[in-house]
Length: 179
Ligand code: 5GP
Ligand code: MG
Image 1 (cartoon, rainbow, N blue to C red):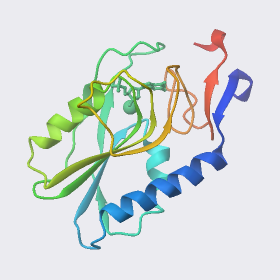
Image 2: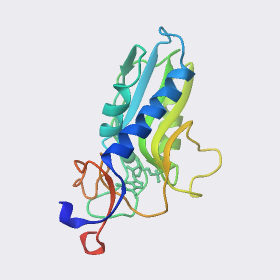
Image 3: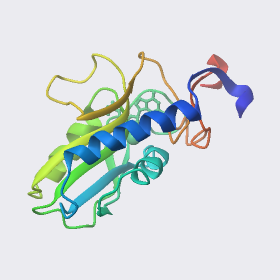
Image 4: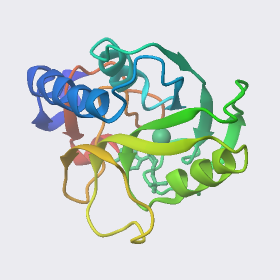
């Protein structure tokens, strides 16, 4: 797997340090221990980010899982988001924090955000580990962003190519012949 890597963008150490900073920002935003916060990670890409993030959040929380697919098979071209597994917890009147791996065109966050907003939560905020520049419309934003990256396809730390490379500990760009 490591032999497929062209370039490492962020090492595991850099990632965990930044995730800790994000957790501190998020904790400051929900100072009341009994806020009733529900984290909604968008699976599968956010799993490692989520696992590291929640272990640095001090408040009580619940998780509500939602699985969205944007890429069908071995491609780096998004087909647009569709629901694979829908949210099962009741978010009515609760504070919701959507957690995703990367904000690219914004279609996924718009799609999930609209679906969740229809269930009348008290608030919705969004945390993403990575953001690519200038592709999302101005009204699709993230409240908490780990790193800004260039417009190239990345893998590792939960992010996949054709469902592989999620277990790479760093965020990396693959060699051209691996896509
Ligand atoms: P958007 O809907 O904002 O275009 O893209 C968001 C989703 O597409 C992300 O949740 C992620 O699953 C996937 N995605 C976008 N860019 C990349 C990338 O560079 N690498 C990987 N592995 N997935 C990406
Ligand atoms: Mg995703």
